[in-house]
View 1 (spheres, each protein chain N blue to C red):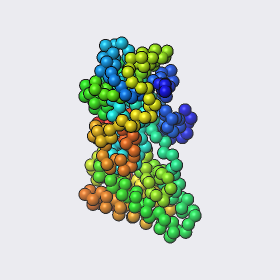
View 2 (cartoon, each protein chain N blue to C red; view 1 turned 135 degrees about the vertical axis):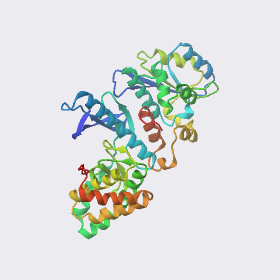
View 3 (cartoon, rainbow over the protein chains, first blue to last red; view 1 turned 135 degrees about the horizontal axis):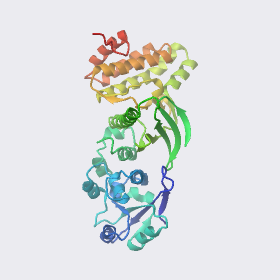
View 4 (cartoon, chains in turn red, cyan; view 1 turned 120 degrees about the vertical axis):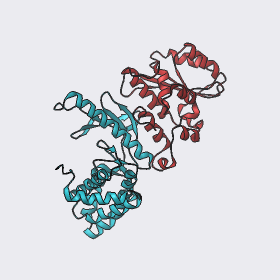
Length: 177
Length: 222
């Protein structure tokens, strides 16, 4: 199993690396590495992710805001985390969507890791199993996701939960839910 | 990106967004408008389109999923509604393959769905602004009446029955002028509309009568 590198649609010169780890033993340690600046990455809470596409849309938005220099947060990786959240409160977004110390699975996003060195650094550091990113659905907590994104049953009668979430991520600066 | 269609306001491109079929609606700048006005009008329309699409969907009306918005180039990346026909094409195909009476019979459930959907929309105070049969899609088998509203570029939020009345009037004109002999269908639409927009429909219908007498634009005399 390897990390998945995806070219950014609107900015072909940019890319994003997505990884999913299961049976993680040292989430707290990995989080400290990112906070301490050992490597730059976005560490996401798997229970808040329905499908990799949700993360791709958030990362795409973050890359776009990074390129046009209109980011709300300090760097592109924190922007990925912030983009994922429907909230405009940065610390609240980090709490809800960022990796917590006691977790045993994690989703990692790295933007523009051209030589793959950051990706390798993360793999070396994490004590866990690299898993196919599409397996992230196993960890998702739909009731909480529905609550955080404020998705009603009426809405789910016409579209899937992923569509509802994606619409909110892409339009978060325009529509307040 | 491949150019698919172009209107007065925007160009529609077809592309792929991370593996999903996607449509890009790009609003181009108009050289005849003052640059400052042009920029603010375009930005405002992109925003209102996104807002209305999301609000409609939240109240249970099918609209395309928005994947990405680029306010700098005024582009909206949205889901391409696969396997769909416009209500316009569907009505035309039914009318051409059946007798007039049969056609009305076949299209009555669709008119019911349209009325019901618009009732919900107006109840949320969303005014579409450009209700035509080309701006409504039927997804899947048309007889399932899975109605999807598109093109919210002229939409706005307003609780006035005047605006809602004009919205219905525009639809009536569009329906009758593109599809002859559909007066009966419009009545079905109105009936269903009154049922789903239970609180406000009386005023809206009264306004519709008024608008029918004078046309879409208000007389500004006196």
